[in-house]
Length: 551
Image 1 (tube, rainbow, N blue to C red):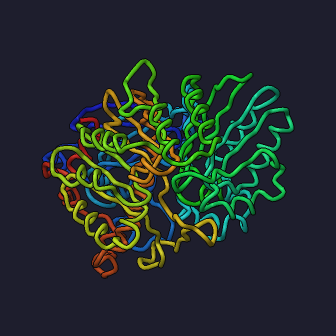
Image 2: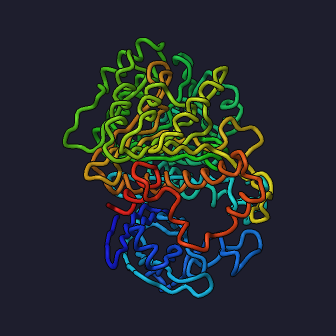
């Protein structure tokens, strides 16, 4: 849900997902100077219980509060946000909130509210009916986890840590599986299949009379999957897919009722400790008989366990790409494929974004998308990455990403954590849910094309790579024109993008110098805070200010 207003020189847009509310503000530079605006304060009213509070930040005016204790926020009413974006990560789904945004004028310590706008939104439900969208916390490397659980492993902390990190994702899968009863069937295709809670849910479904069949990766994950399955109660219900091109990399379940496919659970989430509770992941449930039937046909192909080429021929015929825009908002693309036309199409979609592109890259950036990002124009482009590259060509890939991020309209964030209390304001952070972890931060694989426009496009959740397209077993949803779904994905994208952009910035050259340390701890005490590129046409900050404020 979105809401927008403008008055007295201030414009504000609010975009509500299910667990995140984004706010974008804008004022002319001349008004900031003349009104002596030192930032923006945000007040939130929660309608369910009448709770009203001024939202907090970590930076303070040095002349007012030079040395606040670590991990303690300060009210934006006294220490306003010196940015044209802010986000609330503490909301609940399907709740009504009113946000008051005030331009705070005057001098530190004696600020007064200037131009003010109130906007009311209702956060999206996790379950939207046709679609349900789940994102785990994806931020075990966070100040909040460090505060709550002292960086102890989730298994050591217990259920409280697991619940906080799951954020409803594993519970959503348990509820999906829990629907299956007599005459129903669950057909799954999974890469990492190691979670005891999911095993228990599937075994319980069998106990209720449902037919359960799960294919798991029988190549790189065979030993770990089979070790985990010992004592699972799933004997006779699981089988290894042993003849994939390289990885049987799907993560989906089809629910059929009375022999008729009805729903699909898919997404990026591996059913492992790190997949569910460590690095970022999402799951997407689609209730559509045609989509479910397409997945069921694909599952039957995978169950035959033929080699890559015949699998690719059938998967390509089953799901042509580019997919035609039709009556439904959701179409499907399966891999492996006989060629790279689907990957070329994804790159074309990305390159045709008119105002904004948001993409996650878990394992480096394919050259097709390098070509999309490596150009200067008026499209705002975000890239959120686990790391800059992989393998023997890492240095070359990293140099490419560094070149891309120098583009004025492009901004890149790479996964990182705060390791030391360098600035006495931060707590040290962990980076994993278990000792062994191949991915630490970003495992989602999706792109958003003009998500705040009239026809947003969401594509995910296979990797945007050659191997993902012509070699591995993968699946991709293409969702067009669904603003509610786009708002959820955009909120989650910006939550993690901002989270990791800050952590990465602490590692940049010069980040630990005394001057830089002070600049990160304290607010600017004049209107010069607004001179950081926000009004220089073509820069990412200029484009961000206008895009998120709805201009």
